[in-house]
Length: 543
Image (tube, rainbow, N blue to C red; front, side, top):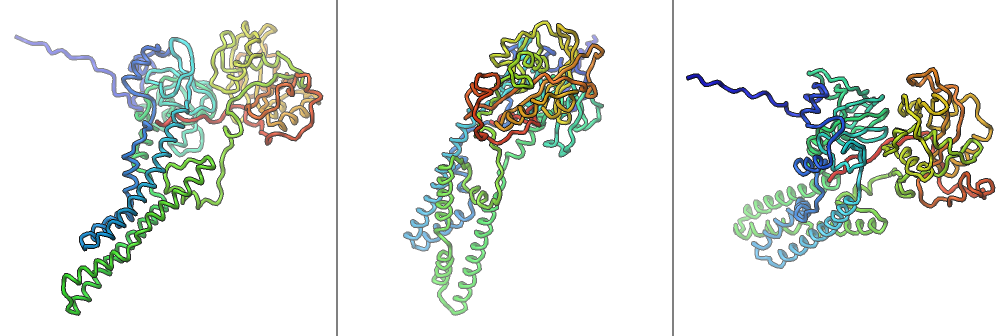
């Protein structure tokens, strides 16, 4: 009797980056059990429960971990040995004093760092970063921690890639991968599968967590999240052990020096007493007493008290110190450079006005700006670009009718052109709309009204973000290149602000007080118009 052997068909390979990069897109979507339309909300929730969040570590406060960090101190270990020796030498008073000093030193460090850990965890839980995800057939914003393999996301200029993804569609996409490869030049991306033996740095159809979209846009499917992503593996390795500060290294070397001196003196005194024919027991006790006496018993208490005092002084200045030993390194800094974003402003862009070159309000400029966003003009929706989102979310943007216009082609923003273009079939025919940094757009206009530059200077003096909008008829175009952005007619400006401590709305262009408002000094420093699109967003939250 012959028994036939049943051979099961081979399953999908392990979803390594190399396998995903070399396989056809259809195979990758099949392995992930998804499609270009993304997952349903129910399926995404099930995968999130099964695979866990898209985060690198869980930010939990552990009292034991904080205490263990306090005990990992060479000086404290030396004093603990000294206390034990003192006790066995019969000097219990000395042992108790050293024990109290140790308890105070450890307690001060523990209380300060534990409070800082709890405060950090509370701040961390309030921070949320979003990605544009296609769920149930439509794009919506989602917390990056809720991304799962199989999600289809949209990548736009200035974003950090929230997970390791395989690209589905690409429109001039370039990613700065220096965080992974060290290469400062942006890597051009495409949808063509990579060769099977290609290195990950050469896999143009992949984009990796933590890299920055420096040009263009794309849609992509997530294949690895959290610690499974390339960035996650690196972060996990770096997080296994905190680096030793210069202050800790100095204390450790000093402790070893004390230990060597104590041991040398102990041996020397013991040998000397034996040569002088002293009793052995008395010689040993005398040598150990000398070793205990030269140990700086108050050193840990002095160090912990000084660092705790510095921590309290910094706390009054709204500075949170997570590790006390870092305060000494902070004091060694000669020059500290910080970014004010989010301290003087809310970090939220809003549209103030759409004006023509003379400063008069006009909906035509706003409509052109809406048509040149990364959102379908017939359905509206959510944009990942903060300025485009501000256009659609504004009250004026909701009133402007864009339906009926059809986008034929678009040229995404890059930092060389500092502009974005859209080829649109509108009611008056096919037009090319260019939107970007004012000096860049004005340089490509055939004629600029005399009122335009004084108006720009006034807006820049108020610290406003200004986007210029221009256009021209383009019946002969079917696609757009940078060379087509010439012969433009300036339509006007879109004025944005990051609200906080700003002038009331009555002082803005188009209001009754615009022409007669007072010439008061600028409230904020001049904000350069050279950056139209955001160049960075926060990376996936490290939990």
